[in-house]
Image 1 (cartoon, rainbow, N blue to C red):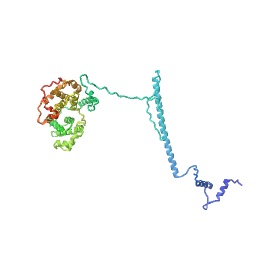
Image 2: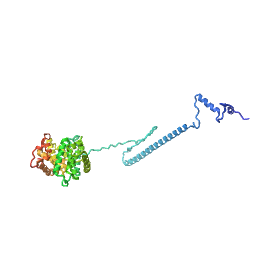
Image 3: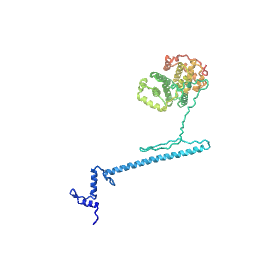
Length: 430
């Protein structure tokens, strides 16, 4: 008879018991199930099976956890590898630089620890931080860009820029460089003799157009730079393109319309220019002419204007306002003279007008200063000054009286009514 133990006895008794009228067919001992049920009733958690709960939810959760854990391990491993490579590269770089430094200072009696500047990129994960070794000593190099030495005028010439240095309205720090730049651009916008190539445009027509532009400038209260830019653009366009006489006013109005967009804070409207043209043209004509003119002149309207030069010369020579106004009157009258606007330097023309104004107002002691800042000697300016004298003494035609009437007003000190000497010695300032 086999030995009956406690386990076998329990097994025999369990086989004879029925559950709901049926015999228990499970291979798992009933005692084990009953024990688990009793534990649950007593509030104890059942022990976890070896392979866990085999359900779809358990499988999905287990796979997600494994995937996330694997991704975290890969990211952490990659970051640690990147940081380790950076640390290794940094250490090797520092060792090479230290070795080179020690070789250079081997002959020196005093020994010093070499150190180099290093740029280290430290990356930290959410759960840990990486520390990077630092060199024992860090040398900070400060680069200082010294200001270039300021060019000072020679002895006997007033240092206007030095006296007004720091004044934002005088532009003293860059005034010399600015006007040197303007002089270099004169050749790029030089206007050749073109009037003989025009079939329908004459010198007289051009003078009438300039006189009309002066009237437009007064009516719209435009800057003088706008007027000079418009005349320059008109000359450049006519030197490159044939024009009909019925389109000459349209060309001048379009040039002034473009110049207003450059020099004016609030430029007049397109309809305003159609109004001053007595509605001789429509909007489409002016717009088409604007596109055509910009294409012809090359979209570059940064001209070196004679008006800017004469204002500069007036400042450096420290002249009074009536003298400067007389120079502006002479220069503005020269806009109508075709010969004074072709093959002529703007800076030279402005210097000649300034010399004639100071001669007429009996200003002395300006020669050295004007020669230095203008770059032209009095001997060079003498022929041009004589041409300006002839222009001023010439009777004004009835069709071109706007400029003379403008500067005959007391607002402009009535400089147009001043007598003009018959002979001007421009080579001397006495």
